Image 1 (cartoon, one colour):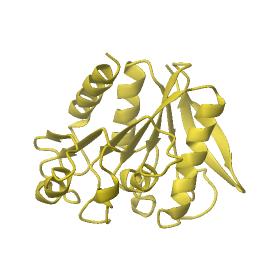
Image 2 (cartoon, one colour):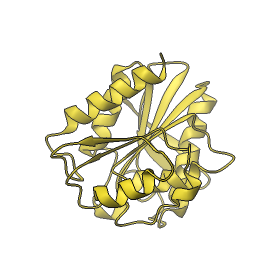
Image 3 (tube, helix red, strand yellow):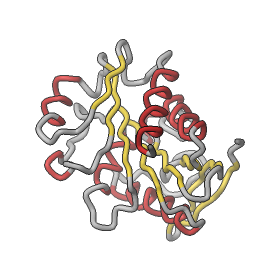
Image 4 (cartoon, helix red, strand yellow):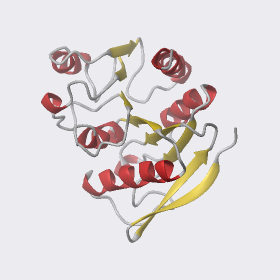
Length: 205
């Protein structure tokens, strides 16, 4: 189903997004990589995540963090970006969607990881793709039972497997590894989609 461009108010800011209303019950908020490194909702991995969820009949909402594309404001080192995620998830809740997934890639995964341990966490299920553990500090002790799936490549420059596995194994977080994939997943998008679709189906059976 085709995505439509939407604008969501977040206080004094306006967040630009692409929304595909497929399900009245289930939706996903998709978060892009680093705003200052060319990240946007048009990223190839973000698009692959969107296609995976849409193929499993889940409404999708990918958006630009503040200061990116048509979203107003400016980069806020992950603090204001948390507010952007919450505003976007609230938009889906106002539409009546009751089960909302979180799917964050790279910087988007890190920002989302700050929300997941909170009492007000709006997500019933969360996926982190290539969390940049070598670039940002993750508070793993707070993330036990808060992340349902992590996906990364075995040659990821910002998410080295040794560093990731040493932390995730301590708190029993499930990790799927794509052989030959680096942080940018060029040429591996379909493999990522397959893993995500398999997970979504399993989550709802």
